Image (cartoon, rainbow, N blue to C red; front, side, top):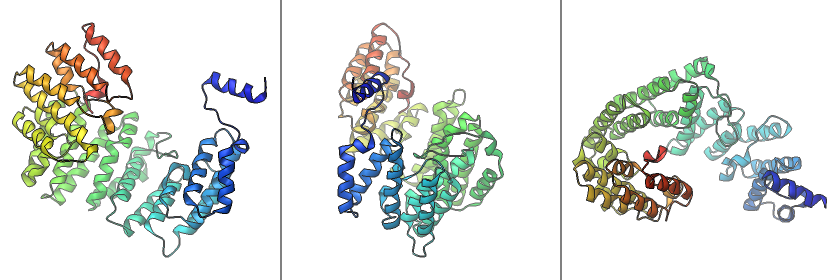
Length: 428
């Protein structure tokens, strides 16, 4: 057997991706020939970097070649969006990192540096020098204070700092957790700065971070309750600073609803608190109550027995003309809300009709990946309505392409008289 065939057999046996050695890749060779003739072809150079990034774990030469192309972009086009991608970063210390670090420092220290350049540099420093990344994002916000992307990025970085994340990977995800850093001087200083801040947009971004990926880290270190309390304090400070701004009431409502999803004994109390804040927001801005999905307003109204409010919100949402990407979500979620309202009013027939109506979508966006919501199906199963739920499963199979196997398993369970554990599909 030839060495090439032997290698291919081993790769197939181990279930590993197969690719030719770097110097044997016709595509890479062709692109390198073309970039030598067209050094300003940004799309081509970006494709080369992405391909080298893919190959770097299998061929040591790929990393050096990749960094060389990144270095050209940093020197000549440091503002391009591509440099905000993971493929434009380096995941470990060494000569390649030091070379790019020097190039980026030269760019960010220029008197006429722009916000996109600062953000691209922040992306490079984020894995190995998160504190430096934060400083660069702060500078970017100072130059473009109205850009919400820079604010969200900075907010999440602060959230990671607070929950004790010492390092990130090239995708901006935590690579380790250190609970002791929650009590560090840096974390306390950051929390103090935020509590004293009047920057409501930044505080909202920090709260979003604490409820997102940083919140998962806090759960791992058994500090989730503490971080939730801090997030709530930030939201209340925003509300105190801007009492007539409905979005802070909405923010608190979403916060309580998010907590309620994982709560047991406090679930009902948190839902009532969420409804109170949504009502306060609606009093300031009536449009809040009919916000487009995935607003939690109507779901909370059902949970707290405010059935008229839930029905009105869902009906208004369905009547709106929205983009195709949101239309499927609106049809799905609002019909499920109307079905749950009908079920609580004792109308099993209408509840089942709404369940089927929720499945008659193309499945754009998250419906095709995360899948359909199963809350109404679960509630109908509790009422013995198995046939209508089985039909719902069948229709959902038309758009839930990501995991039809799950639908098949649930179908078999329902047919055998069981009630499936729907897990996260009861939430999203």
